[in-house]
Image (cartoon, rainbow, N blue to C red; front, side, top):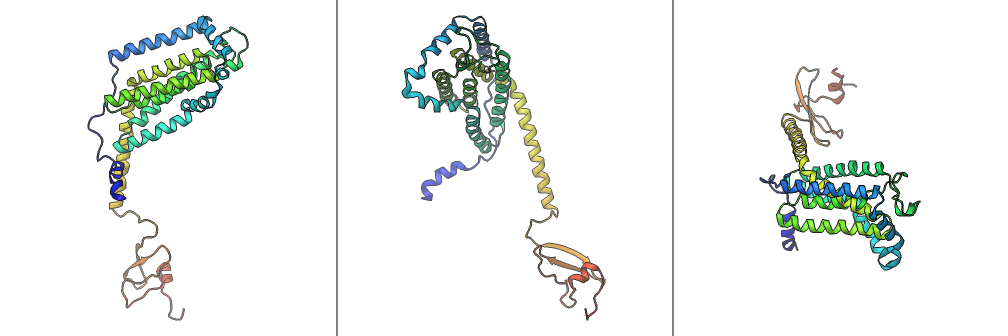
Length: 311
């Protein structure tokens, strides 16, 4: 049994040291071009909704089509699938995996990159939701209207943007080009499925989902600009950890207090004017003098006054 599990247990051990080379994505010309194109697409979608264009008419047509009534047999599947776009469950799942990687490789970059991306997601998508205030299909008030400004928080789709960022960060942090390609395909499939599931359930307009895909992709494409900040934070945290460990080692090596339950050595001067070394357990064990021929009572050493033989 142990022999069969030995390869698996060997993989559980931490790497001996931080990897010598970590592939950090750079803000290349190709990436800047993709970022610019995605930003233009983002603005075009917003403008198309603001002017109540053909995109809004398509939103209403899909809403009246009611996909959840056309294909009720997949309703339960879609209802559970959208969980992969919810912030809490996905963040916990991805953070657990990235935390494992951080522990294995003695690095903090995976967790810090996830934290930065989620912070950017909260700021950008949250601000867009509140600023445009669009109502969802279930709360629409005027047929054919873009439903902008009445106080909703549906545009862009937070589920869709979160699916793009949370699953896409795995591809962003991939160690090899092959892993990056496979994880990119996985994250694209997850984000596509989550967005379509929200349209099927009627919780989002199609334009909400389109803008959510663009918003999430913008964050992933812009993330290399924040790599210096991530590296600085990682170095600062690791340096503080090294200092704490060094202080602890120095303290333990120069007479640090022992842990609870271990004996404590105390040196006291008793009335007989001789130095006696006592070993006293914290549990209240007996105290004996350093010399067997001159026993000293506990009370005598505590008060510093000799006791008469009759007491």
